[in-house]
Length: 233
Image (tube, rainbow, N blue to C red; front, side, top):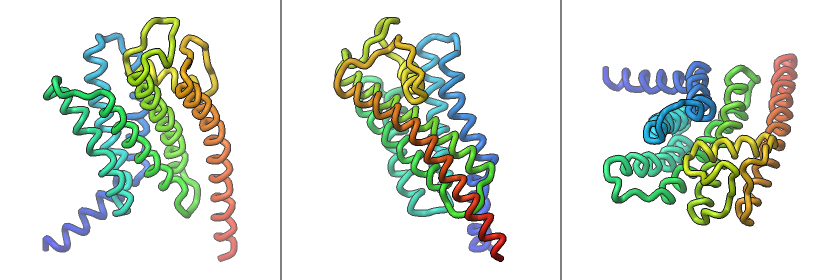
């Protein structure tokens, strides 16, 4: 009986995490990270705590998207676990906290989850709502990944990025700068000054434009191909 139930349970979980409802939940978490948390009028300590909680759910749900593909799930899990361990170890043992290492692992985890989402988007088949939600999620993940990169650069060189609002300390500040750069908005209140930060900013601006163009072209080509195959049958 257990041998029968276990495969069925695994199949159910795989279908659930790859469903449109799950991807919508994952996207909602990203929206909370990028747009809701920065707007909350709460003290810094609470923002950091809320951010870590939401980040944990983002990582877990992002890794779980790959549940149905063993090698991809294993890759994402290996990339994500150190990030979660470092983040929560800092709360349990503040004296051993290493912000730089935590951000490095965070960047690796987000890049891995972005690869998982892109793999789901560009799998063979018709273009549906799941792929569209995945494309939006991947775009937001790119902005979050670059935010980690800016924070890492700032930790290595506090003068790498200057702001007219004073010193930047919160990850939410890097999110703001990242998405202004990704969308090529650029208000000018935060300015990269080091070679690395300027290279990151230029790379992100180009990445944002290329991602939109390539993703739209790819999804259209997939839809056309699927439609032609259906007519050929």
